[in-house]
Image 1 (cartoon, rainbow, N blue to C red):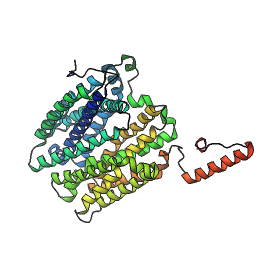
Image 2 (image 1 turned 90 degrees about the vertical axis):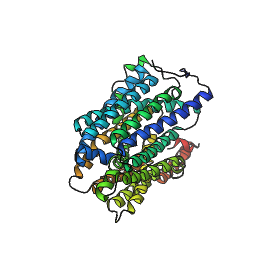
Image 3 (image 1 turned 90 degrees about the horizontal axis):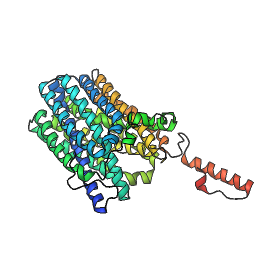
Image 4 (image 1 turned 120 degrees about the vertical axis):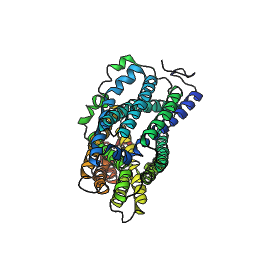
Length: 438
C-alpha cells in the first residue's frame, strides 16, 4: 500500500490540488536531474577506481543503455498494472538500492558489479521517468496551458545543482561511495515524500495492462513505415548524440586532455547545462520567431562550432566558451523533434514513441563509438563524432515542417499554392481559402 498523506486519487481535482501537483512534479523533476548528474559528475573517478580505459568505460555504460531499453519494453504494462502512483513509489525505492550497488562497485573496483548495478539504475530510472512525464502531461491538461517545458527546465536546474554538489565534494576529496549513497538516500526520501502530492489519480488500469508489453517499440512499429517519422528519428538520434556525448565524456576529457581536476570538469559541464537551460527557457519565443527549420539549423551550426572549438581549443580558456556554445546548440533539438512528431493528434502517441526509440538506440551505439575512438586519438578529438549528427540535423531539418516536404522552400510552396488557387478560380469561378491549400 503506497502512502497517500491526505492526497486521495481524483479525476476531478480542484485548482488547489492541481497547483500542489504542479509544484510537487517540478520538485520531482529537479531531484531527477540532481541524481542524473550525481553520477556524471564523478565519471573520471569512477573510471580510475574501476581501472578501465575510456573504451572499457564505454563498454560498461552499454549495460545502462540496455537497462533503459528493457525498462521501456515493460513500463507501459507496469504503469497499467500497478498505476503511476505505485510505479513511481517502487521504482524510486529500487533506484536507491541500485545506485548504492554502483557506489559499492566503484569502491571495490568491480566492473562486474558495476555493470549489474548500472543496468538496474537505468532500468528503474526508465520505470520512473515514463509515469512522471505522464503525470506532468495530466497536470498540464488540467492547468490549461503548455507548462510541460517548465518541468523539463526543473530537470535542467537539478542537473546544475547536482554538478555543483559533485564539484564541491570532489574538491573536498569525498569518495564516490559516500557521495552516491548520501545523495541517493536523501533524494529518494524526498522523491517518495513528493509522490502523493504529485499524482492526481494514478490508479491502475488492468484492461490496458495486456497491451503494454513491448513499450514504444510495440506501439510504434507501424509508424516506422512513414518516411517523415524515420527522418525525425534521425534528427532525434543526432540530438541524443549531441547531448549525451557531452554528458558522458566532457568532464573526463577535461581531466585527460587538459590535465585539470575532476571538479573543474564538472564546472565546465555545468556551463554546458546552464546554456541548455537558458535556451530551453526561451525556446518558445525563439521557435515562434524563427520557425522550426531555421532554429534547428542554427542549433546544428552552434553545436558543431562548440565541438570544433572544444576539440581544437588553443588553450584552456577557450574550453568554457566551447561548452557554452555547444550547450546552446544542443538545447532545442529534442523539443523540436518530439513536437514535430506530435503534429498529427491522432498519431501523436505512436509517432512520439517511434521517434523516442532512436534516442534509445543512440544510447546503445554512440558511447561505444566514442570509447573506441578514444583508444586511437585524444578523447576531445573523438568527440568530433558529434559533428556528423549536426550535419544530419542541418540537412534533414525540413522534415520538422508540418507539410513534411524535405526539399523546396516555404516561399516556393506558397507561390505554387497561389498559382493553384488562381487556376481553380479561373476554371470554377470561385475562390478557395488559402488554409485549404498547403
